Length: 164
Image (cartoon, rainbow, N blue to C red; front, side, top):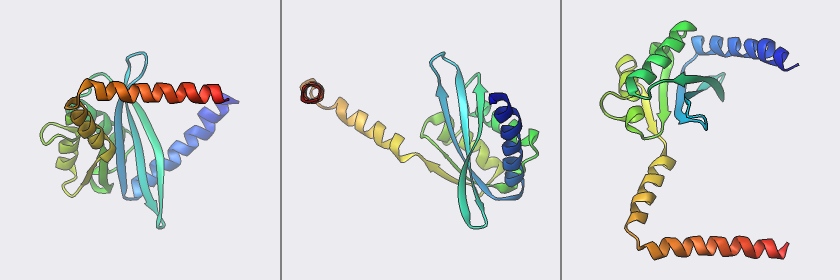
C-alpha cells in the first residue's frame, strides 16, 4: 500500500504540481536544515495562486553537500530545468531565513535568484530575526536572570506534575 501511494498517487500529485508551476506565477519558500544524521537538505515549498486561491505545496527535499548560496541556487536551478518550469518568468516571490547564504546581499541564494528574476519580491523570516535580536539582548543580561527563568520553568513543571 505504501508503495502504491508513493509511486502512483505521489507521482501523479507531483506531476500535477509541476504542471501548475509551469503555467502559473508562484513564490518559493526555502529552508536549509541538517537532520540527526548530519545530512543537510533544502526544503522547498511552492506558494501558487490558481483561480484566486492561494495554496502551499511541498515541492522538494533536496540533499545538500555544501550550503553556500551558489550551491543552493544550482540545486534549485537544476530542479526547475529538470522539470521544465520557467522560473525566470513564473517566480515572483522568495522567502527564507535571514542567514547570509540565503538572503545576503552578495553571493547568496537570494542574490542569484534576483539576477534571474529582477522583479522578485524577497522576504526574510521575521521569527528568525526576532530570535537573533532576543539572543543578543539576553547576552547583555546577568547570568542570574537566565538561571531564574530556568528555575521558574523547572518549578512550574514539577508543580504541575504533583497536581496530576
